[in-house]
Image (cartoon, rainbow, N blue to C red):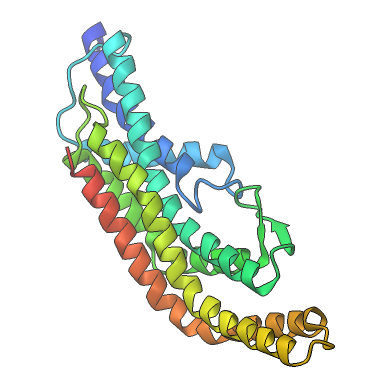
Length: 259
């Protein structure tokens, strides 16, 4: 008769429970899979499936009783690591949302907002257009597979232990905000510069012909020109997306390899 001891059961539970929390936390926070479009049940099942496949590839885990304070601390650390990794990927997608908001505000479409079904937050229509393009490219380029591969690699670079996130790693998370605004400005800068020149021209016209209603004439022209500029900038969307995604993945790889 095959009998399991308490130590064997504790080792089996600890072997799967700690990686499960990191993997599931990342799936809950990352874009596409972690959005409201995917059911939480699907994310949990996906986390269980990936955990079953990943555990045999992991280095030896610490021998800590699963029902102890040390085990609880490890669980909290794994959840924080998974959420931090998902947050970095969210920052990459928010670059396009913020860039679209910059463009929409300059075009006069800041009032034209719609509910984003993936996050439940009201964003401008330009931001939603860019977000849809980024999501489709992420799936077409197998970005989800790259993320899962990086997640598996994170257990080698940042193994499960009693050591959690350091102060330097929290600074890296905070520094991603400056990267977000700089890359969003790179997306919006060509359109913003062109519309600035148009607004300067309308300012000169208002001084030359004060009787002309600049607001009635300028708003439709600015809106139409902004749409044309967005259409002309679509071919540059793919190179920018590849650059930003590579930088985000590199930033995430440096994050998990920093301890």
